[in-house]
Length: 443
Image 1 (cartoon, rainbow, N blue to C red):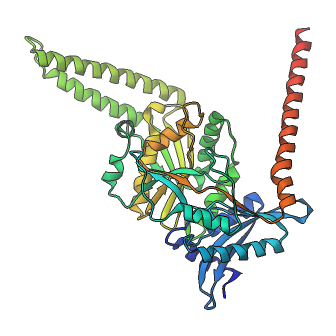
Image 2 (image 1 turned 30 degrees about the vertical axis):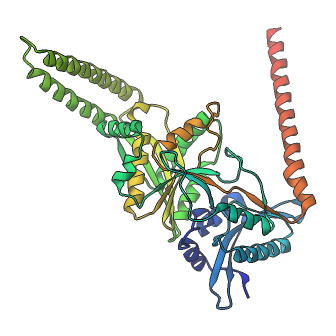
Image 3 (image 1 turned 60 degrees about the horizontal axis):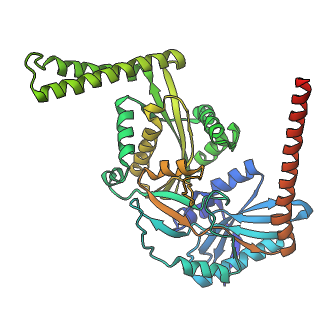
């Protein structure tokens, strides 16, 4: 007889971290605590146990409280369970729904970390070692309703991502980088850019770069305190880790590096006999002269940068989350100056190597799109992440188990409709007010 029970923190994390297929930081104890502190959600750490009190499935269940003493539950990235075991999924679903009903829940949402389709870096479909359609049908038969194969970021978590297999040799991983990515990493290294691991004291700089990125992309996510709390919670838990990577340029070092290159070119020019040049010598001299001109321009440009921005600049700041045998690039903030130093590329490269050196198996870039049409404004994000040669992953999507159909309709259909009407009305009123002020000023 299987029963559902609350699980001790360390026992829970030990099971989830070591699950052979479903360990995910969004199911970690740390994520539940962050959701409680910063999102006002109530976390439950639940395990399905057998008669020997052994855990056979588990889940972090986040409760969102609603008016009228109602609520709904969300299991981010789904239950930690072997989804190929149909009967086990049925029992887990039944127990979770019973738990939710006792809390007056309208519905239970899951978005399982189940790969629906997978393509390698050459865009060739990779055969999975299970049939995703069977799991799809298992969830339907258990009572869940699929919310559709969305293409962008409409769901709670990204339905698409890129993942790099870190069990490959580093040479093979680099081989899958695009040609431009390799060139940009090399150029960044030649300019003596630096990637360091930050501390809690660097969260302010990280937040600054996040706000710059958000302003460019027209979205707002979290305040500085959120990132600081996340960093503290994940590093205060022995089962998880948050690492801050800082990509920097030290302009004096960059200028010195360029001056060394200039000296090397001048030395090469000096040994070319000017009199009676052969055809190949003329060609060589022309090429070296062109390189010399370009480097002199670069040196002048970086001297101007130094005067405008100062000597040391942090241009990229990325936060990596580790849990179990995986790592996720959860947040990445970048400056919009000195982009020709390609610090962002070098920062990605360094934390890929870092994760591999730590013995992790999967590096997840945490989110891209399924609609890769030219007019999609998110295509640039997709193309950037694609350049690092990971497998292109499509997940199964979101599912809701509806408990109270009437309130579910009101909550998911009427409330969003009402909010959109209010939002449009507010925008219209603001526009009219601006137009009226403009007319008054013109009078």
